[in-house]
View (cartoon, helix red, strand yellow):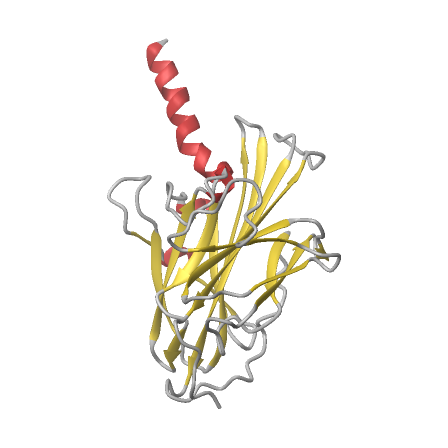
Length: 265
């Protein structure tokens, strides 16, 4: 009986992060020169657990997730098989890989997760994205980039309405639209969490907004940082084989430099 109890408890603990936590993707930089590589990290944190911060908590099982890069021409590159584990134990650290870009333009990193957690029983559907720009020159970065507002087709998705890469800096507004099943979701809480900041309990008036009838919300950062934009949605009527409800989360990571680019074409 004791051995059986240990097995059951271990299963619950290992499965919990996939349901109660959020995933996000981030890069070491949002701007690289053509032909260079960007490093991409896939991380798991406790925002879905109402801790309301930017802290790591556990690590996804690689087979449970999908990681891609969408190029400016729409082609997608599967990176899931190239993920490297930088944690010492199964629940520490995060996954990482690198991607070399041969063509200039705006690239989008896309992550999805869809799994039924049998002990709940709840289905967890997650999406995450971030963007980086590939330029022929790092001194003069073109601002006429397109594709940042392209839908990825996720069940629950955050869409940037303004270019989240260039120009970007303090005072530059981050505008997003939240989609559920391809349609704008109004009345949802959207958090804009700076790394190193813990949000206040309840509704944080400084870092949280409520989506309007178009599913839109905006936030203007006052200082440079990495910002995690995150939203959640629960559908108690979305039941199926092995699950009685569905919980969704969507994240978007935006890197805000300390100074706005001053040499933009």
